View (cartoon, helix red, strand yellow):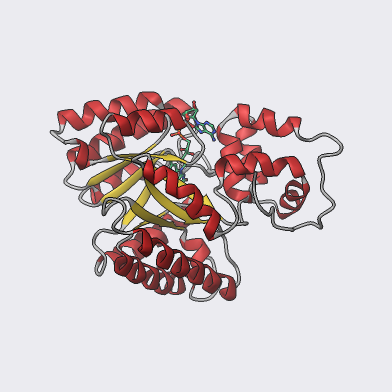
Length: 325
Ligand code: FDA
C-alpha cells in the first residue's frame, strides 16, 4: 500500500527511467510483461496465443508524447502493425484481433490543439483498422485526461460505433460513466495510475466494491462488457452477473495482461469463455513496466534483488532495451 504511490510516481520520473533502463537484469523482468521491442517480435508472441484459442489486443507502447513528430511516428507504427495483422485475417475468428491505443501517445498532451490532433490520429488508425478487420479500444490514462478521452471516443463513435473504451473502477465518476456508456464496448479495469482521494477510491476493498457496482451496470446493459482483471473474486462475480443478466459466453469477454496468470487465461479459454490478452510491445516500456511492479509486491522483490552491483550494462542512458529475453 505504501510502496504503490512511490512506484507510480517513479513511473513518471525520467531520471529513474534512465537508471532502470541501464540495468541488464531489468530486461529479463520486462520481457515477462512486454512482447519485445518491435512488430516482428510482437507478432511472434501473438501467434501461439491465438493458436491457443485466446484473442489479443496489441498495444504499441508509448504515452505522454510531447512532440508532434513522435505522435506521428506512433501512427505510422500502428498503420504498419495493422497491415501485418491484415495478413492474419482468415486464420483466426473475425473478432480475435484488436489494437489498443493511448491517446496521449497520439498527441493528446501536446500543448496546442492536442485533443484535435489525437482525434485526427485516432480516426486515421480506426479507418485502417476497419479496413484490416481489426477492432480498436482506447485505453484510459490518468484522471486529468478522462473528460477529453471520453469526448474523443464519443466523436469517433459517430463513424466507428464498435470502438471500445476503458473505464477505471477506482475513479468515483466511473459508475456514472458506466451508466452513460453501458450500451457500448467497455473494458472495465481497476485503474493503474496514482490518483488523489478527491477523485479515486484508495483502499483495495473500496476499489473492488466499485468494480462490482460497475460490473453489474455493464452486465445489465445492452453493450459488450470486457472484464479486464486478474482478480479471481471479480472473475467469479462476472460469471454470476452474466448468468443473472441472461448473457451467453459470446456476450462478454475476459481480458488479462500478457504474462499475468497464464494458466487462468488458458482455463477460461478452455471453458469456452472469450479471453483476450493485452499484448504490449515497443521500447517505450518504462511507464507500463513500473505500473506492473506497483501492482504486485512479488514483482518488486524480484526487481529489487536485481539492484545489485554488476547488473548495470555499459549502454548509455536512454538506450532501448533491445531484444527481451
Ligand atoms: P489486482 O491488482 O488486485 O490483482 C489480482 C491478482 O492478479 C493478484 O493477486 C495477482 O495474482 C494477479 N496480478 C495482478 N497484477 C499483477 C502483476 N502486475 N504481476 C503479477 N500478477 C499480478 N489500467 C488503466 O489505468 N488503464 C487502462 O487502460 C488499463 N488497461 C488494461 C487492460 C487490460 C486487458 C487489463 C487486464 C488491465 C488494464 N489496466 C489498465 C490495468 C488495471 O487497471 C490494473 O492495474 C491491473 O489489471 C491489476 O488489477 P487486477 O484487476 O488484476 O487486480
